[in-house]
Length: 113
Length: 114
Image 1 (cartoon, each protein chain N blue to C red):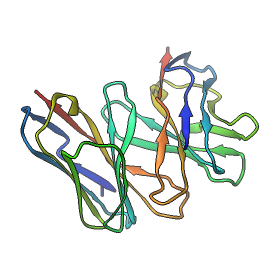
Image 2: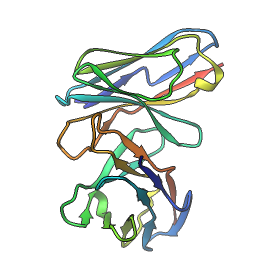
Image 3: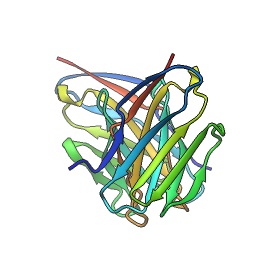
């Protein structure tokens, strides 16, 4: 049973398209995150949701919009994709009060051509 | 504000040699600190974490790290490297606040030579 699952694993799309990445966790955690890992492996937080409420919204273009229908799901929608959006996007979850350890998904490699 | 610096983006050791990956942090509150490992084309896996209990923390795969407040360091060590340890390693600090945000260092690629 995968604890944090992301789909799709790979996504190749053209500039200007709109795409979504889905994330689901079955750990019962109350907080979920999206991180972006660039080509130099640098990880930067994008969003954090706690029980479906947006907690952290870092400086991210408005083209990126997270949606959390329930506390087990956090999806990421990206409008008008640009070349610079190419990266690996990781979903993660954690339980408040357990010392902060995250469980990560296996990532979605987005390539914009 | 919090930050993490990992000294050395690449570290190469021989199989059986000591592994030492360096991490220094900056935090305005007593930190929670973490080490994660990332194998190629995979997500990050938690190796170990420090949450203000014992300063020497043991993790999976024979790794351990020591929290040194005076040096603001949390270096990762393993007495004897194995080929399977070759991966990218990330140190991270938590703000322990709302959202429990982790700030990651830039990562260190560990290479193990036979």
